[in-house]
Length: 255
Image 1 (cartoon, rainbow, N blue to C red):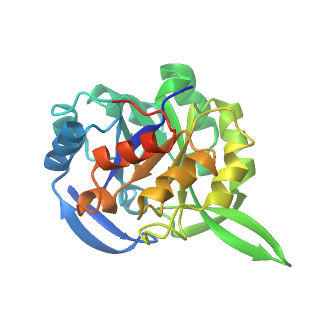
Image 2: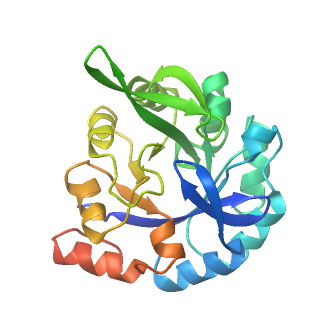
């Protein structure tokens, strides 16, 4: 059995960690370096840093923040936001990241996934998907959104995840826009639909607010890893508490 991973997420806006609800109403949550160091001490398996305003503002990711965070941690480190080419990916990896997450640019030009994967390996290539539940004549589907969940794309999230895998992505970072920041649980249906169609790991994101939510994402949604932000930033739970709870429920985690 492969151990499930617990991943704190740093959503960074102009150098400061923020958190909102469904990507809106952003509130300051702290300094990225200080939080990253704390999460390493708390037992995080990996760390994600997403520059949430880079794609909207049409700029590159803040490499100085990446460099400062990377210098303080010794766990795998995924960075996303503003990645528009394989050269952007190289710049992020060269400044200390272990993986690069692509979202908006991959929607606009799917070949970017292949370019990054072929150059740096699938293990470094993460396809980030922000999806919202939609209703069409009684049918429920999940639409992919770009530019930090501000623009509908018309893409079906399940089909896009499968295509991303075929293009060389080694992992899916799947965020429910509906559930983001609400602490009412991950979108299990969204997770189940995607985890059942791809063979690469799926990271659940958006909605953690209770210990059982982590378990549901793994047991019911098929997630290989669970990502959370506000419950860790605001001290609702520690990573240790999440891991101890999962162990008590028969889930293997890394100690």
